[in-house]
Length: 141
Image (cartoon, rainbow, N blue to C red; front, side, top):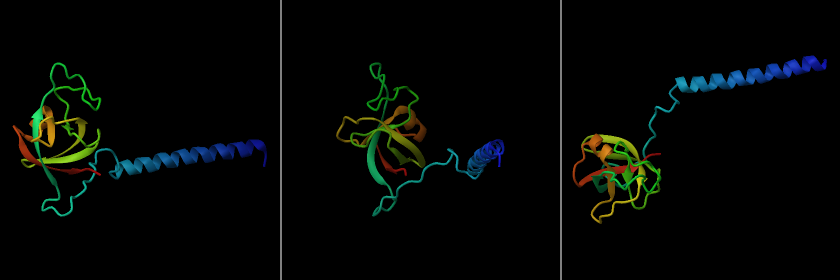
């Protein structure tokens, strides 16, 4: 076998590998392996509903709040929760008033002892939460 033939075979093998990887990625996306699937949730053992319970109330950005404690731009459309212990970016499911939503920790708080979570105004509007209410929550996988 001449060096030219060996080089052509090597290039052909490389092209075949790239096409195969592309075909597998396309097949995975068409089979539902894309980003439009929500992560599962971790059921809380020993509870009737599989959720933790907590108290939450909405909160809004103020003129001095440009960023959350987690570094997010604090806008009127930001959807997330504030929690004093859960790490920034942790994804959780919130259940309230017939709404189940996937959200994440975007800030620290709340600053009052009678609440476990503060929920951004945009998310509170989405789930129709007004005032301090009991919610259910659990971790996303």
